[in-house]
Length: 165
Image (cartoon, rainbow, N blue to C red; front, side):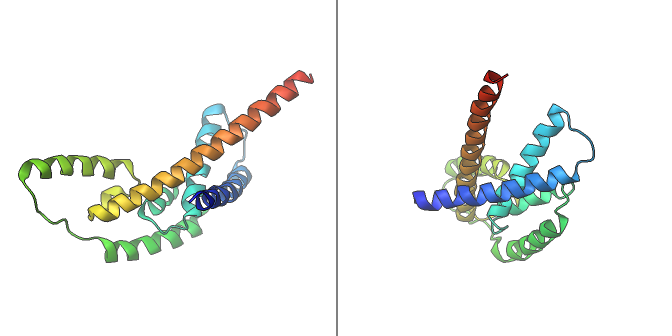
C-alpha cells in the first residue's frame, strides 16, 4: 500500500512541476501574494487531477472547474469528454430500502459527502460515491504531504539564505 501511495506522490510532483511551469510561462506580469497563492492552488489541483488521468469524477470536476483559468484547455477537453461518456454509463438510481429515519440520516450524510467531493453531486450510486471519496482522500493526502515537504524545504533554504546575508 505504501509503495502505491509513494507512486501517487511521485506522479503528483511530476504533474505539479509541469503545471507550475505552464502557469509561470502564461503570466505576463508579476503576481501579488493573493494571485500567487491562487496560481499555486490552481496548479496543484490540476496536477492532482492530471495524476489521476481524469479517470474519476472528482478529477474531471477539478479540471472542469479550472478549465476557464488554465492554458491547458486541450487536456481539459479530452478529460471532460471521457467524463461525459463515463457518467452516462455509471450513474445509477438509488434504491429505496430501510426505514424512514435511517434513510433520512443516510440521505443527509450522502448529500454532505457529495458537496465535499468535486463532481460528487453528479454521482447517484452510494457505493460509487464512497469509492470516489476514498480515492479523492488519497490524492488530497498526497497533495498535502508534498506541499508540506516543499514548505519545509523552502523554510530551511530560506533560513540558510537569510543566515548568509
